[in-house]
Length: 161
Image (cartoon, rainbow, N blue to C red):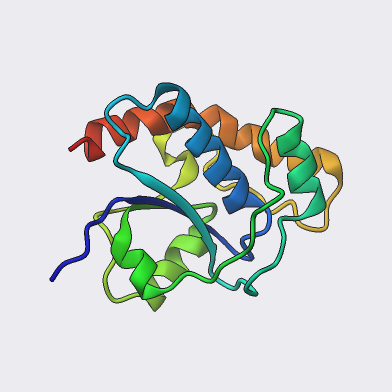
């Protein structure tokens, strides 16, 4: 029996900075303006995550500044079972996409960089702010915020039931 692919999955390396921020941003956007996308789940995982790590303090702080709470986030390692539930997987860098293709037998039709939904002339990769200063985390968050409206439109066009 096939598993329903009903999840928008974000992946990064450790699942403590970028992917939890992306998960919170998309979940918030779908709550506010996701008409027709209510069936979708939103999740985040790491390709090299240690299980049950809290979001990094600067990730928590930068998201709280825009009204989103990462305080309950705990990191998780991506598994084939989660990949099988994913309708789309958004990675943060080309190396994440390469790792997905190398590690998993079955991938969804859509395996993209988070910023692939934007016009072609913009930077695609989202740099890892881990170990950087607060401003690095703000820049990371803002590069995701920029893509969220286009991502919601992409999901409407491709994943509406």
